[in-house]
Length: 637
Image 1 (cartoon, rainbow, N blue to C red):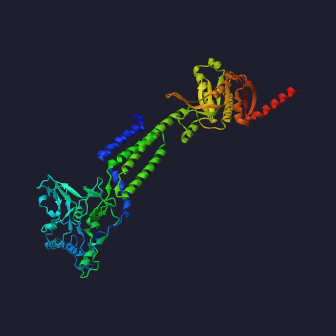
Image 2 (image 1 turned 90 degrees about the horizontal axis):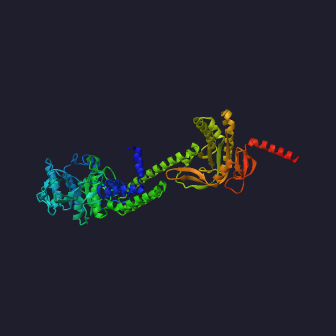
Image 3 (image 1 turned 60 degrees about the horizontal axis):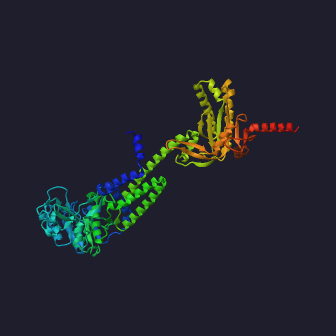
């Protein structure tokens, strides 16, 4: 199929046809395939970044950060009298920190550090860590669910981990989960949960799992496990949408460790009392960084702290399911289709779309302030895509109509005038015919029959084409509209489609120049020129002007009594004057021209006579006046 044929078929579709197609695609997407979900996710991320600075930082959850300075100072004898070496540090270091923190009675100490493999070379340090942890009941450790591998037998996982078998589960199942096996000799202290990163389809983390089910077993996440033990309510869902904090209180690990080594600690003794302490690393070198709405390098320890604090404050975000937005989206698309179908301009519809979209964004912002995530962004994009399709269809249809109108107007008007009409948007075949004040000109050839008898048909056609070209060029130059050729006659008018207050003046000027051009043209005919002449009649008044005809054939023409009288006046020129104008035209033109009064003439179809005048060029006006004065003097004598 050729592009033109395809375009024609697409043009044949109405806006409601396009609405039906788009509505079907949108419905399938929102209810099944979810292709546009990422648009909603990324759109919500923008508002989240604007919203997060207004969320106060938590004072109940504290992050102890193994930052870059801690990694350096812990192994610097000038800072730490007992250097611990490079990372990974002996686990007894963490044991000392646990003992220091435990004295302040925090609600919980949560590690975001892997303890999956015992240190076979420093077993005494592992044991010191185990002893410090086993003496406490509020210390939690991370576990990680893997995608493959045989994994641990779930029945042998210490009950302290909180893994439970679901109804119908397999007691002998193996699940590839990485456990804190350093605590193998103290299974009662192996307390914790999963810290798997919850990625959305675009690999951005916006949620945190509350639990994961695998092989008939349910494994709680680390935040959910802490929340359960501390008596915080857990929602009946498998994950929560994180409500990000504006900032986290990061305390360098080395500061606490050095304070723990002093006989008299200098830091406040109740600094961590009643708080949840999360120990992890935000150092870039340790690569515990994730992609979130706030940053592409967001510390994993802060994600864990955010999830714990959301459960503490019960202020996680609520997701509105995408299908709930579908009725509003269909209503929006229907409004666009209705606007274009009623012939409203793309600018008007686009302006209303902009207002509606701004209202949608405002509602989404207010909802986010109320901890509700509205998925309106794909609907906005879909609305604009449909709007652009409709606008393109409207443009192509308008262009097609305009090209059709231009093709028609070029038959009647000077091409330069047509270009101006196109530029101003005034060319429209759909415009109804209107009553306009115009001046109509009829020009007919005299002696054409004699000329036809002495020349071949080919010569006659050539002669007429040259004659018509000269006369039409004059009409166009004076701003006239060529209506039609009627055999060897020409019909033209002034005052439409381009408004012209001086239409009578321009029409008379064109008629005089046409008469002068005839004189020059007759010289080309040599001996046949004396038989070739024209008559030109002009009349001014109201006429109905516009595209008139059938759906298949339209002509831009003028009709009415003004037109009929102009034709009758042209018939009166023989033996009187080459150019005759009605009194209405003479009055409309004013005193720009001089006139010879040709008296009252009776024309067909009118009971009263019509007074006619011969317009004269300005240079002939004085001579004509002198001749009339001389004639008057002789008559008086």
